[in-house]
Length: 350
Image (tube, rainbow, N blue to C red):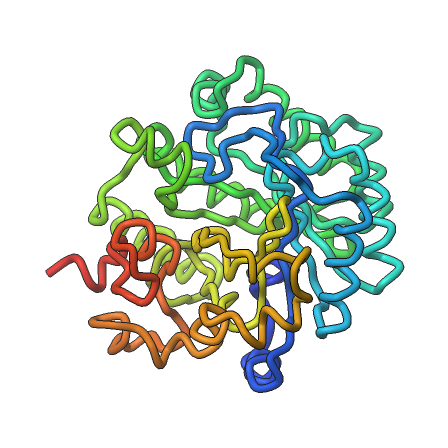
């Protein structure tokens, strides 16, 4: 049995905490992009890997952090948008987050993590979600769109483990893996590796945005394949870790309720419910309104905070009441973020 949590930070709040945040229109967590510039061009990336126009300044990013803390946020996901460790003020932002008492986790492709960077991250108590889709370097290079990526990610994993990640008292370490045709056969191996090494597995069905939509035919796995995969992962957890979880997409072992208590702040200042609901409006930009105003007045946030009252069809009647499916996938494929999640086997399979 692992000594650590099974939930990645930002998805591990209690139902009482979530309910209170809903009732008070506050935050528990927020996702923060710095820049969409990235040193890779992953075939499945929702953000596209390129800097976008009019990105926030360091002072604007600090304002987002301060506003979020004032609204109750305890956790920030440094999502980067591109590669967070490539951002020039990354370490300044970490220091600011710590000064405000925030716990944080960085989602990184790992290619910029050297032994000294790993030690610096450890000393900052920064959680790390390492993007690793396969242990086979050629496949990883193909998915990342750049040679030698697989080796660099493997090196980064070794450095993180060497400095004390995935130990009982170390910062949390997760491996984020996107399910696709190229790695489908290997997902169980990655999952078992994580469980056996005190690493949190973050196995995620692909959201059809950005590069993923363009490369759909080369990457996509079927609903039935995803269902069978998740059943195998659940059976493994039940047998070897006495751990059970709802058999629902899009993340194995995790129930995403971030619509109820979180926001996603893009690098250009636009505020979204989550990465998948990429709706842009001047009234939902931090340069025009405060985050509190956006939570109070933007219709999409009022709907999201009460999402169970607005779901259509099977999602509205589902037995898994802590799950609302993937709203990003519903929006991407149907144009209606309250519609059935088309990727969910509970709706799509007989």
